[in-house]
Image: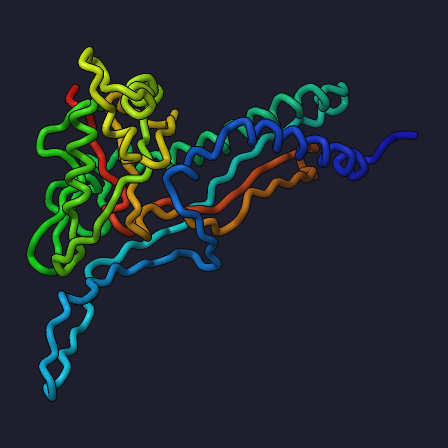
Length: 302
């Protein structure tokens, strides 16, 4: 008894979905180390950064209380992109019973493409943050002059870029500690995690995980490790394009955001005109930055 096309599609789909899932999951969700993920049910999301209030004043007995008002500093829009791709198996390949081998190879390739694209898009703000990506306040994501409502500025990069080493990491931590809110109040920001490209993993290990100071024969204490300065350690992001760049994610809330609009979905159908069988994958999401103080970055000195 000949199997119908509809029955063939029904038989093929679960197996292809299983292959797709296995291959897709080989790519670690490296963006989870950078972004807070939220769901969305709209075509875009918009987040507004408010200035907060100034320093509270002393209220003398019998006097009226002083009232302050928050101001809108800037807003960030997240436009969700639809990421999709598919492949077709020809009617002739089906006739020649090549669909098993072809569909398996194509499905794995499609899964790799979808997973790779997501990680590249997630890494883009870091990769482009020194000149081609701003975070809503009108300057580069990593800038010495993020404007404040109070008239001052915050800096989340170095005046002179530096490669990752003990001194540069300590200087970054000190700089982060000096950040203020929009009204000039210290926010006591701290680093959480170091993000490095594969080239930086060995340097990161030596700086963060050895008991003594790197490159010293004086038996000095590694203050970065001893103080727990980077509590979440380091992670490697394979999609950073600058081999000398490095980043510190901070505890400043509402920094880097990932909005999931439509979860990854796959489907399959047959085309009447060509007789081809088509399989596709589709997902909608966006990556962006609501507050540039969510990270400190250095592009390295070389």
